[in-house]
Amino acid sequence: MGRIDPTGLNLKDKVIYINRVAKVVKGGRRFSFSALVVVGDGEGTLGIGKGKATEVPEAIRKAVEQAKKSLLKFPLKDGTIPHRTTGRFGAGTVIMNPAQKGTGLIAGGAVRAILEVSGIQDIVAKTLGNHNPFNTVKAAVNGLINLKNPDAVVKLRGRSEEETQEANL
Image 1 (cartoon, rainbow, N blue to C red):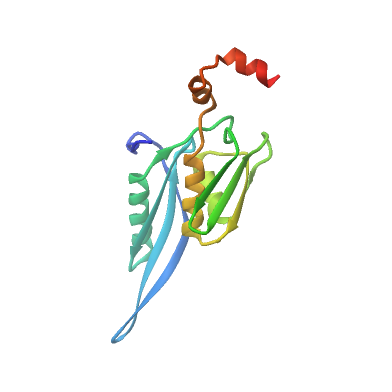
Image 2: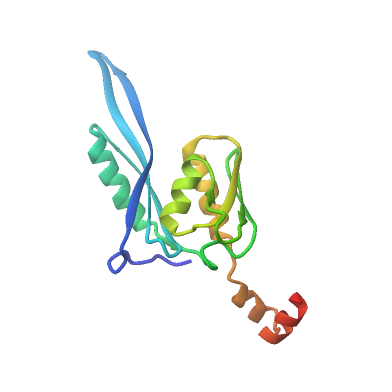
């Protein structure tokens, strides 16, 4: 999974979480904001970024820049994922199951935002363990990275597509 150049892509961004952070100094409290943002092209390309600044718009801008630098691609199959996957990061676990056309996007919070911008329309996802948005996002991305393209797996196993079609009947 190499780095993807964002110049030719039509990326849309979505803010997942904004956190106000206070630093106590001699004269009182200094507030800054951290933003968690996800960007995607709606066709299986996704990037996440964190930004921190004294103003919210500046934090979001920094997060979008970082997200564009961390783009990665994963396989899609008819608006859903090719197979069941589980992503883990820290104490958080995200389980994602492919769904039939028309099911919709059944996911909560941070995972829903990721799936919307990445172009998945039909999926069932469940977040287990920790519900910290930063860890949940990283767990979901970990699960999406682990997806394998079915055609590539068939070739890797040395079977022809006809044999695979017969085995599925």
